[in-house]
Length: 125
Image (cartoon, rainbow, N blue to C red; front, side, top):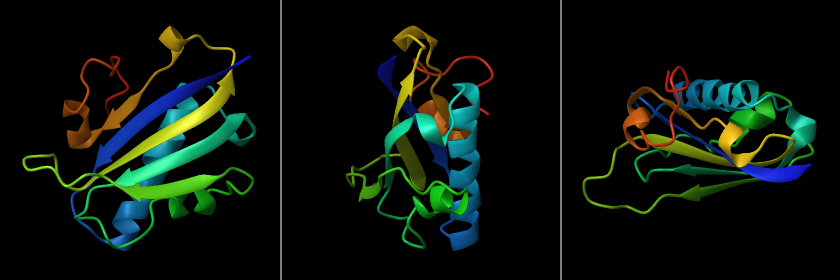
C-alpha cells in the first residue's frame, strides 16, 4: 500500500457560508468516491481558498461529513493577478493500492479549466 495525493478544486458562484460548505462537501465526496477511498484511508487533507472566500473554513465541510480522526488544515491561496476567483482546492493524502496513474483528480465547475491535463473524462463535473 502506498500514500497517494488526490487533488481537487471547485469554483464557487459566490462567497456565502452554506454555498461554500455545500460545494466543498460535494467536491470532497466526489474525490473519495472516484478514487474508492473512505475516511480510514486518509492520512491528512489540506484545503486552500482564494482570498475572496472568507465566509467559512473549507475544512468544516469534511467535519460535517463526520471526518474526525484525520488532520485537516486550511490555507489561503496566493493572490495572483488574473487567477480564477472563488476557488477552493483540496489536496488529500491517502493510503491506497492504486498506482499514481490510477488516481483521478476531480475539478468541478469552472475549476476544470485549472488543470485540464489532470482531469479525466467524467471527473470534471
